[in-house]
Length: 115
Image (cartoon, rainbow, N blue to C red; front, side, top):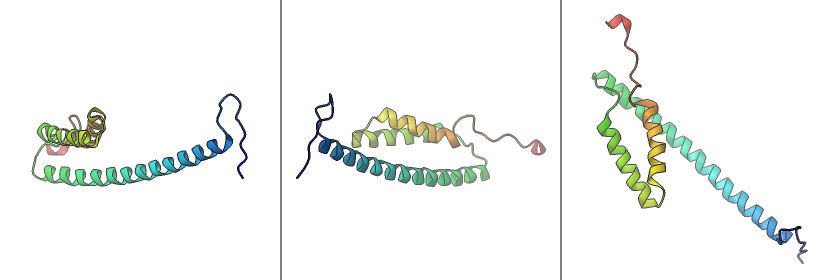
């Protein structure tokens, strides 16, 4: 037998609040798990980027490639649209990721001994 008690001014019964709280906690745990997965994927992407940058450096290529940046942004915004999420928000996230490693202004300082 359930005991129902009205919460003052809300009109919501206590059993409803408990169910709401449980459902919200479950969703939040799932979000936390997705966040953990995202961090692992960002770390993997960073390692791969570092490998690409090392290879570019070995061959005298610049770190920043505007054409590649445009390709990535075009691809991820199209994917975002396909998933029904805001492509501009996804572009913003990827701009942060791209600029963190190989964006303009991230060229390593020249080695004074090599000049």
